[in-house]
Amino acid sequence: MAKYSTTWMKSRYSLAGSILAKRLALFFIGVFCGGCGPTVDEEIRFRNHVTERKDAESPHLQRDAVARYNSELIEMVKNVPHGDGENTTGEWLQELMDAEPSGVMFEDWKVARRKQGLSEVRFVYTAMDESQKIVRHGFSWRVNGMLGTVNPPRTLNFGDEERAALLPKPVELPLDSQREKFSLE
Image (cartoon, rainbow, N blue to C red; front, top):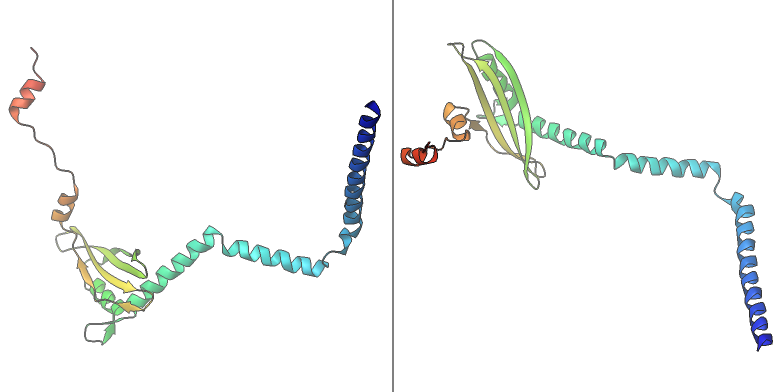
């Protein structure tokens, strides 16, 4: 019985030795033939291609693309004929701002995405009226960037009523419940 077990062990080690020899042979073939890879020019072109793809997918370039798209929408609104078609929306807005008695202090264009392909472009400017009170005026356009259509402007209201509606309303408790809550007895 012992003779059989030693034979079995010899065959096992010879099998393991042949597997090890095959792996070592493959390793040396890989090491020696590793120099048969692509040429330096091909490798440089491949690395440049991979770098370009990574750059195209980077977030800061996506932000730049969004900013570029937003500026295109703003330009689209500015170049749309206004009213009777004699001047553009940009010229009309400039006339409105020039008509302010004390001039315009701040002007701001903003783009907000609404639905797929639809955006809202807002123009808000701040000026002073005759009584030296600061007033805000604004207009809003619905823009379909995919179709290149701009809806007529809507006037934005920045009155005190709107601001008051946004503030939280105080809760008034009945006097009886307040007395019960804060009684010293």
